[in-house]
Length: 236
Image (cartoon, rainbow, N blue to C red; front, top):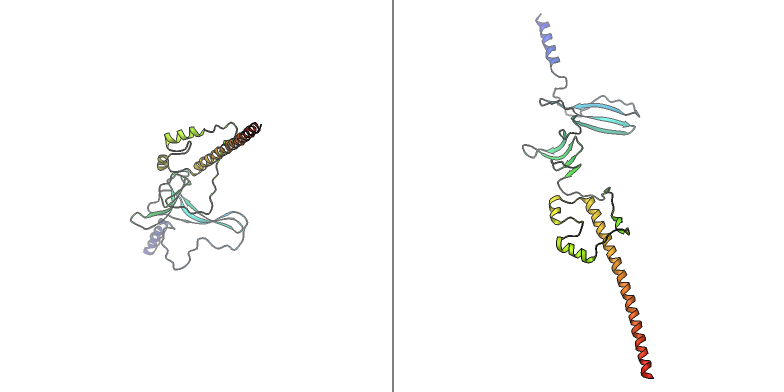
């Protein structure tokens, strides 16, 4: 009887505790799921590694292997189920102090932060970014400057604007840049606008120069003809 009661109590203890709440110490590889040597061309999920604990709050936290196709594999990590909310995050950090230091943050709304926890844009970086190339997709390039209907300020108008405002028309002021930073795409378009306007000023200046040269040549020809006329009069 005592032996039977002990078995019943033992079974209650075993069934009462979650099967995946045990600590496992190992001095080797940890494998999740059984190896299957068969090669498949179809998309399949692998076994998942779940993370739970006393502070569990109904958010799913797990990572798994996903076979996309033959020789195409992915490691997928699930952080909560509140998309597109920013409440759930995947964080890579270090034990720098009592609260830790966030190095890489990926929020459930798709925003990513590097060396920062303040995520306001799609990519937020606190530090320098080194790259060999960067491509920005934008619209509204400045070639409309070359349309015949485009109003190009006169040089005197431009000089007056600069004297009054301290910066070029359409370009942000130093105060605006200090406050809001630079929108790279927008500033690229504005710079191109000013470059193309500058070429229009150069073309107009060159045209005026040619007109003055032609006028000078004409005046020199007239002066030479006048001198020749006077010489003929003196000879007579």
